[in-house]
Image (cartoon, rainbow, N blue to C red; front, side):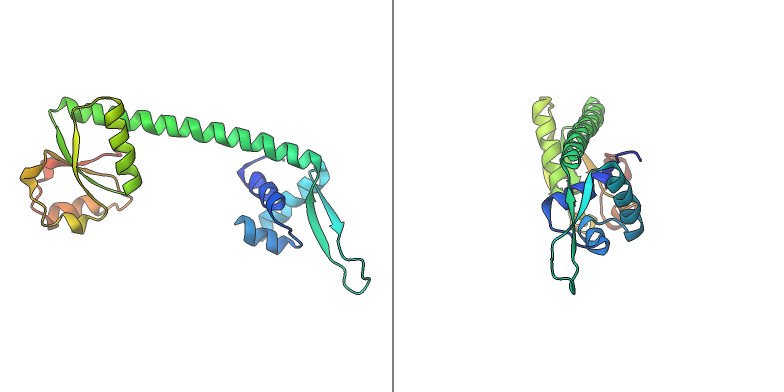
Length: 187
């Protein structure tokens, strides 16, 4: 069995909480019961997890899943691998957004409004500052409806960063912003 993100989730859950059933492990890890069963069996075979009897009463048999030292080591290796992967992913996204902003800047755009999550707006602002781009985010909206009455003369471009596939069309239809002033940032 390959050690995957789901394997890490199971090892991490077992490390953080006392788990006494596969159903409980599925609930706490967010992984389906069938997948928990498959992964847990493999982890038991590899010696990463052991089952321990925590109730000595013969009428009430209770078990708990515990990480072994090998399991803790495997979890640590997986954590490092996933952190490195996330940092690389972050760097790639950052580079793509920087390239988009540079391309926008080259068209002469200086003032933009941003439609998208506040975290992305802050990320863009930091990227603009870091790259010393002559672009200013003059306003921010989280929903296209908020832009409906916004004066299109106060900015050069409306940048959209949304998972709403209809957002572009809705904004164009329900606002005074001309189509040529709307750009999907994440194309």
